[in-house]
Image 1 (cartoon, rainbow, N blue to C red):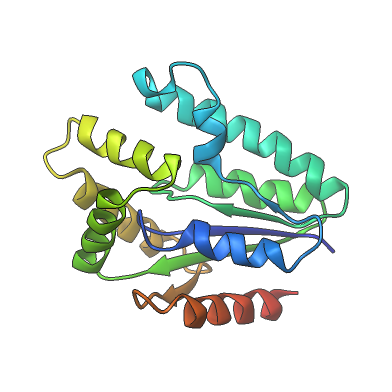
Image 2 (image 1 turned 30 degrees about the vertical axis):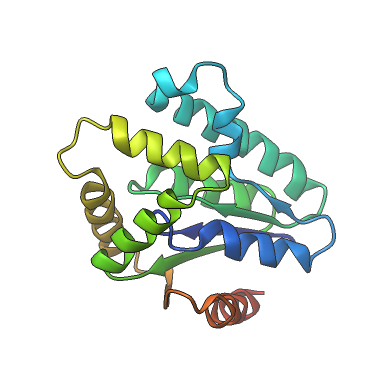
Length: 185
């Protein structure tokens, strides 16, 4: 049975890094980074909301194709609302795949510090894009708003598997994520 794994968490919590490690050990598994898909859309930064919705629709189609082919899909994505998570859960049912919802959790100030450090030394285009989105946000405290939405979402998602993240301890976090995935297999 294929796996559909959502790795949710605040920006810079390690979602993409964990997904990259998980995919590296599973032949033909797909790391489906929606931020990368979004970046493929022309002028996305001028219309980030529309681009995000389009990227999610494309990601669902890609995940559907890959799951129906019998392969695992790992989606590292910050989500502060349940709609896309519910779409993923329905897709897993349709594809007869196991859906695992994992929330990478860290304290607010640790998340803020991690984002600041990543932005200051952004080697990856998606990290530069995230910084640009935060910079353009009309919110007074965009990272704080995202963190609050994530926390509120977790209150509504009792079945989300929580993994406490210790900054700088990627191997330990990866081990705990892998244990959760094995439990659901």
